[in-house]
Image 1 (cartoon, rainbow, N blue to C red):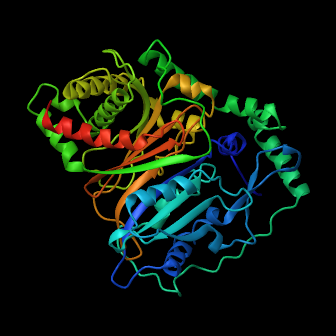
Image 2 (spheres, helix red, strand yellow):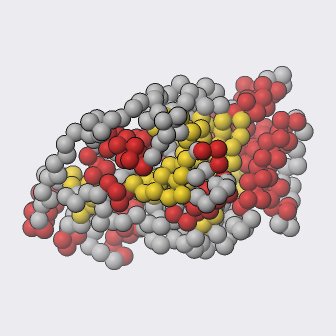
Image 3 (cartoon, rainbow, N blue to C red):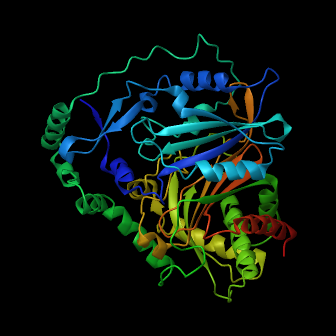
Length: 472
């Protein structure tokens, strides 16, 4: 019996459009070992790491007549060289050049006729470094059968993968023919009649039926948004009809700066109520304030930017690579408040209300709504793919803790990692944040026309962190 996509996973395929590619990305920067690191080495590492994860060698096959959800079948012509690609930056290999490369490759949709992932080895970075740029489709990521390809690549210890260790021999199974797929779908419908409502017949019916799958979770999110604010999200330049091109900016900051802000507050009455996540959100809020003022936008005392924030429950020093306890909050970032410390306290209070008052959306509901897989926490958003997301919030901000010890691809140590989260309809910007080995790394992914000044926002975020440290 073929492994059938759930209605959630299938929806990622049906609702994907040219402007809203439904894959999550990452940019990982490495220092090569003394022996060097090349394309062949990367291919051996990937072959070794995906040997026990069949999904990375499988592709999606539609059922004739669409009498059932698509199925995963082995790709008999699997070509590693197609999925693992090589690129080089011209001298001097600056971060700005890397950002422009990421902005070009990330919006391109993955080929549906092949396994739904890609990796680019980007050579020529300053200081002899290299980068791995990854893309993994939401339909592939479920946290059980497959993770984000970026998470598969790295390990907590350096290792030398020889040619002999590349991978065990993989023999693809012959895929079922059309008649067999139809019979399997009908058998599934009999065994699990509750899935009948999810059968898709093409056209508008696909979206309608798939919308029913998310209805319960969407209701939870709507309820959360209603409690957060009585009005829809404010009309801001962050939200517009988006195109197919992007701008990407990466920001590296020091985790100690966020801890210093929290430690300073330890002398005040609100210390125990402020988390590192709150400091990150306050930093972004200050960046938005400066950016809006610089644009000449009216910023009154009650001005907000509404953010959808999936929150991982973790301490200041997460020992593991991922956190499984996740909630999603709809948070009003008080960009109209001129005082940095006051912005932080307002955000901390609002977050605490949602977390303790049971108003946050739990991980299960979030998964039903947005394809959230706890081992790959940045794979969120875009699923809504409609004007509804624009009404609920202005921007998606994912903040995911990473390990505070180094990770390796083979013997190459990862220096930094930047998430690239996709855009939903009407969303001109998404922000991903990851903490790793003493750093906090931001990935800003923006529509090229809606946010031509996303680099100004990035600088404003850096300045906002300085302002928080100063205690003003």
